[in-house]
Amino acid sequence: MGVALGLLAGWKVVGTVAEPLLPDRQIWHVVSPIRTEGVSAPELVGGTHIVDGALTITPHVFFQADTVVCLVGPIHAGELTVAEDSGPVEVHLGSEAFSVEPGTSRFWIEEGRLRLERDGQSIDVGRTGPGDLELTSGPERRARVESIRLDGADGVLLEQDFRSTRASILPWLLAGGTLGAVAGLLGSGGLWGLPLLALAFVAPETWLTLGERLYLSRTPTHELARLVLGAAAVPVILAGFSRALDALPRLPRVRETWVLAALVAAGLASRQEPWMALVGVPVLLFQPLLLRRSGALRMLKGDLPALLAVAVLGWGWGLLVLALWRLARLVAEDHAERHPRAAADHLLLHVLLLPIALELGVRSTYLEVVWDWGRISQESYDKYGWRNPVSGWSSSCGEGPTVVFAGGSSTGGAYQFGAEPEAFFPAQTHEALCERGVSLSTVNHGFSDRDTFTISRTIDILSEDADLLVLYVGVNDVLTRNHAQTRKQREAAYEARTASTRGLLALARSSRLVTGLGLGVRPVPDREQNPSSVPLLDAEENLRLIAATGVPLVLVTEYVSPDMAHSLDLYLELCERLAAELEGVWSVDVRSTLTADMLVDRNHLSREGNHRLGLRLADELDPLLTPDGRP
Image 1 (cartoon, helix red, strand yellow):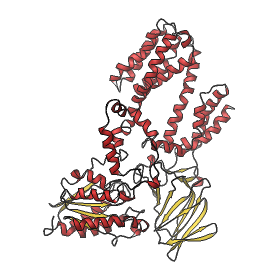
Image 2 (image 1 turned 120 degrees about the vertical axis):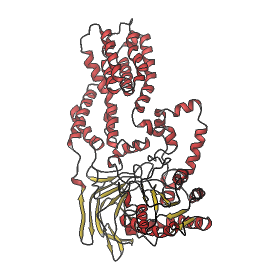
Image 3 (image 1 turned 60 degrees about the vertical axis):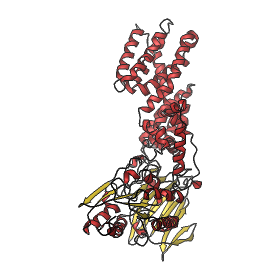
Image 4 (image 1 turned 180 degrees about the horizontal axis):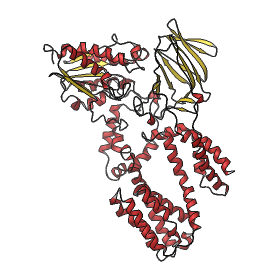
């Protein structure tokens, strides 16, 4: 019976603990705003995988959902089969967008109009042309596409059926075996396995929510599920050890044997943190000293597994296992009744040891950095370190002025060109100017998530050697809505909190454990009501701060797909107004230079788009860099 229950729970847990498959990067490009804008390390992406026979796009908690871009070429028609347990799939083709419900839907372009067949009826979506296909999910439920077929002008471009892709049976057998043992304990009257069995039925999107709440950017959801399931299994393992040890005969000279084992464990644990031996060794020796006259030497024999954990895991996690082990044995056995004074001292020490050991364990992982309150308060989720900007590309041709480009992922970084920074438009501008005989140096400071707020706060670094500054901005300012407060409001809140941090509050905020617990209960903002990260008034203030450096400034409003263009009209007007008002500021309108088919998604330029923009900016910068017009 226990094995049957275990296999049933194992089958449920496979989709949680089994490593999901990644979409083919030659076909699908995933833009995940919570990780990176572009999958430089796709194993970290928690929102898009091939899971349970479907391409699954899971909504993020604090950020918009992933956007999955199909890279097969201009698409004229297609067919999507959406799983019955899926939420609506949001589809974008060319300049139009539509929603697809569970079932099979067809779409095609006819006489320049995008049409959708739904429930046997043909719906006119709007005017558009062929383009790349983008898929995303709604904010509430994950989108699951079971199969897809895409047609181009000359025939089928892509045909994929994800239903034939299933997880390996090995995780099911492993999970089933483990949970079968737990179910066996339950059958014998034990309750140790209840948390483990309950966790087997937690949905994968719940693990994603937990990971994002706690900033676990380096722990994929399936690994997080394995860690938590493993932690839930600790009582079962401890109970098994306890029963096995109780069956062993009484060891001669147990105190001396235990002290020797404790010193060996301390020596092994001190290899990485020698200073911790000052705390750890007294904790290890506390029990035999405390129980010297109590006659409870049987308890010392059972301490050997905990010493092994200290030797293998080190002082952080090892002390945590030690404390849990000793407390479990204290509760499970009759020491409290036989030796109440020793048991009370034992209980007090190890209860106090629990948070200390957990803090040390957390600090031994990458959470030492992630759960730093100061970094979180300064928006440490911008993991690229915007406060210390580093150029991603630079080049020179002759002795001349230095042109510095700055902006978000459309300007440079790790988006569609990965490790090919020469493909971005700053390098294309530089090459075009050099071919015209203009001597200059060019530096590209573009990277994901940059906006006028981050640029203005680091302008001293960016403008240090600049003779001309070119900003390609707009999208990350007014179209980013990932927080309940604007960037400026968050900066003011951080400064206020920092100024009031004193005494015990400062000590608590230095604790990684306290910070992590706080992240777990932080409220989820209403994304539909979120303000722009940098509203127009704040953007104007930032641009004026940048212009106040005295470095000549060229403002280029980002080019986006036609359905989003109206959102940046006022931003372009702002740039043109500042150019007319401020000396040494120019505004460039690139809408006549670029077209929608030069985008790889709704706002990032293709290779051709970057080349065209580079040539246009070369025309604009040439008169500013020649001897007669040099700034």
